[in-house]
Amino acid sequence: MFEVMKVIILAGGYGTRISEETENKPKPMVQIGSKPILWHVMNIFASQGFDDFVIATGYKSRVIHDWISELKEPWKVFPLDTGLDTQTGGRIKKCIGKFPQDEYLVTYGDGVGNVDLGELIHLHKINSRLATVTAVRPPARFGVLEISNGMVTHFGEKSQTDAGWINGGFFVINEGVSEWIDGDNDLFETGALPRLASANQLSAYQHSGFWKPMDTLREKNELTELAGLPVPPWLQ
Image (cartoon, rainbow, N blue to C red; front, side, top):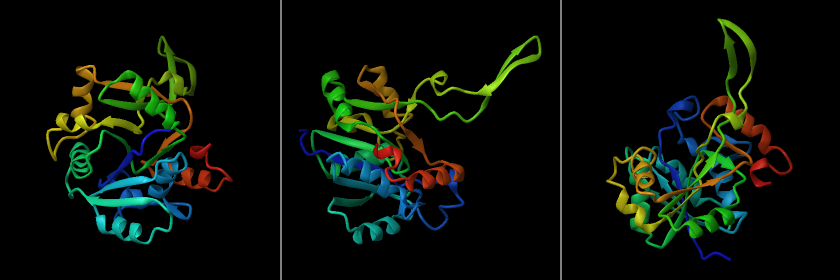
């Protein structure tokens, strides 16, 4: 069994890509079925034994803080207001500073997947790097054309396996990652992570199972439908 590891959930962004839903609430509080997507994300971790959470809030933080105060689950949840305009790297750095420990699980408050957290942590420890990112296949969204001499010879959906790997969140990071984050304005995805990769300090856990973000109303509606199943795919 792994030692108790805090789960940092990044929940402070503006959610501008789904602005229809985020005028009065932060994106992680958008409802998927009867509960906010933040709850579904937390439940992925709790169902695998990780229920000690730090929620890094920012935009409309009071909505999340109030929701946490009424949460009925037997989870340990600490909301930390990391600032309105702080970037993802800065939010992580503040959480590490507030709750120092050797390692952390980190994810976003707007994406779900049936990631095997035990395997993710195991790989992180074997590779002995400062950080491990879960790599996923991007959802197929666009029709693909094959063209020869100006004529379409094939039209079809892009296969996920043709699309390479992208950052799916679900990180394991060591406390030392904080030193690779410049400050509040450092975007984790374009700052610390590329620097770690350049220094051979970023490993990847390749997840081929279910993964889905909530960046659009269409994706929100698709997740809502899946949440109504007896067991949603992110818990299978």
